Amino acid sequence: MPVTPLSLTAARHLHLAAQGLLKKPRRRARPADVLDSIRQMSLLQIDTINIVARSPYLVLFSRLGTLQNQWLDEALKRGELMEYWAHEACFLPRSDFGLMRHRMLSAENMGWKYRRSWMEEHADEIALLLAHIEERGPVRSADFTHPRKSATGWWDWKPHKRHLEGLFTAGQVMVVERRNFQRVYDLTQRAMPDWDDERDFIPKPEAEARMLLNSARSLGIFRPQWLADYYRLRQPSLPALLAEWQAQGEILPVEVETLGPMWLHRDLLPQMALAQAGKLTATHSTVLSPFDPVVWDRKRAEQLFNFSYRLECYTPAPKRQYGYFVLPLLHQGRLVGRMDSKMHRKAGELEIMALYLEPETNLSASLEQGLKRAIDDFAAWQGASVVRLGHLPAGLFAGRTGGWEIDAV
Image 1 (cartoon, rainbow, N blue to C red):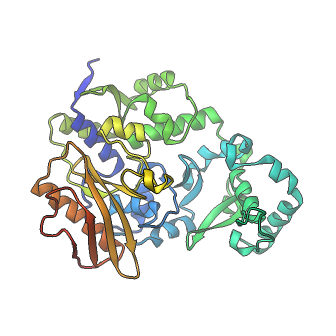
Image 2 (cartoon, one colour; image 1 turned 90 degrees about the horizontal axis):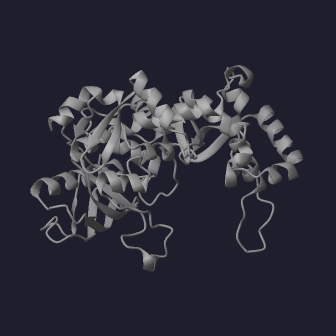
Image 3 (cartoon, rainbow, N blue to C red; image 1 turned 90 degrees about the vertical axis):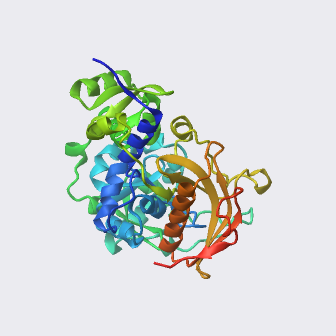
């Protein structure tokens, strides 16, 4: 069977199509789009840094355009979504509960996320906590007081927070909603009344095979070594699965310029001919989260987009190259740059301390127009009416070097 040749640009466009990032949205976002977008990505990573928009909302904004943040919270509360350790802490469709259940029931294999010694040492307190939830309903860790300050002078996690985190990792409680982004926990048996472990349990090999196929679909086009990172799987045996998927028509081999042999998921077959002919065009310009699936695997982003990226918020300030919380910039199928920014919510101002373009990115009117539109949309979505600019590449936004005013949404 002949192997389909693809240009690197075509491969990038197919990946972005699989991720919902190829085209600018044609209509206003609706609440139902949140679940659809998460299904398309398979996972939505959670991070609490709020110097600009929190990452889960930003990832959705990049794909859907202006949306209301509470739509994600409401989808969780309605039971359309769940939270668990997938790539890292993630939202995922609650219909994928079965894929995660084997992890919950083997919590001792979850590393730092679960400490059996803690759970055994505090077994009586934890039993009382579970009884409290059963009798009185869902709880937050904030509902419990902190008994003491640690000897180091820092406040340790409250015991009940540790209890709830352990119960969450072990699948005894679930996050059923968030209030001001704080987790609210309820008993899993109450959140999932129709689930039965004896009847519905999916063995680890089958669950991981399904996770890998989800990864293949969400990546769209992939090297085998890219698959495991999506759900943080450890050295899965891929050759037999790839052969099985190919025989079933789930994937087909392609040869990508500079990258060599890769695989294409069948969902992208309708777009492959367009990609081969150079007619699968990318029109989207947007700001990405550091935890967007397109860039969360740093090696993949470098191989596919020639974009070397790392998050520097945990790096001492003098050693940072670009800034504290730097956001990748997508423009028409390429990762063209990054910006270090901060949202001043009371002032209604988006401050861009620095914006950098990639070395191979040529400044053009189209690029400048696309970046300005992306920045305006990003700022207006957060209620900003002013953009303030700091360090810029030479020639970018000439005449606007101090910034500009926009219309708030």
